Image (tube, rainbow, N blue to C red):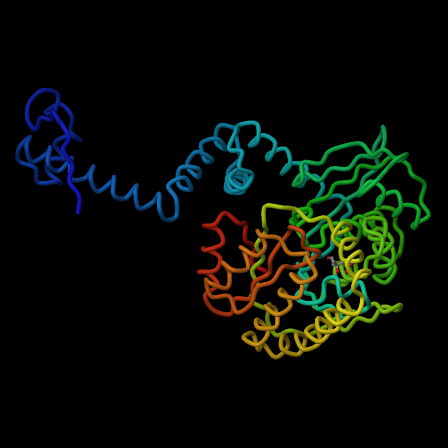
Length: 420
Ligand code: MEV
């Protein structure tokens, strides 16, 4: 119940009203007979609107609706063509920068992507580890599913140095081959492995994976760029060789990788993985995409740091850490059976146990714990951090209530992706 007292000076007859057909139509529709009726009606509508605004503020957020409207006018002012209009609007909102310059930048990116669609392409998957992160580095099994077609790369010759553009990450630079690190070093290594000279190339990468979020972006870029170079240079290469090259790139990135990221990125299949000196992979046939949501925290996690931290602690207590890794190994093996049998309740339970063990080896963070708790409270059958941790993402299994979980996480300000 609410009340409003508001001074209103309105008229229902005379003046310009007779000259304005919309005014008499309004009076006819509302059945208003007098200025007093009209004032009461206006106040009642105003009151209802205030209530609606209060409700929006405490629920889905008035901001969301306003932002969308604002983004549409910014996109229109930047000259977004009809075909790309909705794409520009949603990218503007996602970026958090609903500004003219951002709209123009997005339009440039779309144009570059269209131009690159004609260029030779390499594709790679991202990955979501369900069980076995960290334990995989110590020869135990890991179970992972791919995020298919997550990264696309293209290569063209250019003049004036080798350049790298990853518009989704705001990367556009010339590579410095001398003291290269990170992706720049990986690109040099890829060319070396392909026995190609370092001449000038323009490398363009479209990534649906955010960096440092535990979803395998660095391995996926290595796989996609290797394939793009092979395509462009007409080099015949099989998946096993692509995987070896990407594994070498992963070694550059974090020293002692198990190879799970590059392997799933190359073969893009759900798989049970093990690297105990020799690579063993068993791909799984699933009857459906498992109902998984991936929520990103606001912190990135550096795999090299997390792997090094676990190694330090392993050194202090090898027997205890081995026992934890053995337990995770069993969860991976049992998880593979449950995943194929679509026994999601039991699978969720195992994911929760695995998260506890990852917390025990100190790779969780307060924010990851918060996301896990929110997802479980909203009805997820299981939720755990995925990837190296120290930030990054949580994977939640939601055979029922998936919308509730998605909404709860979004309302808490986390970005959610539904695995397809
Ligand atoms: C990173 O995605 C997974 C880790 O187990 C590292 C690796 O297996 O190389 C943390």
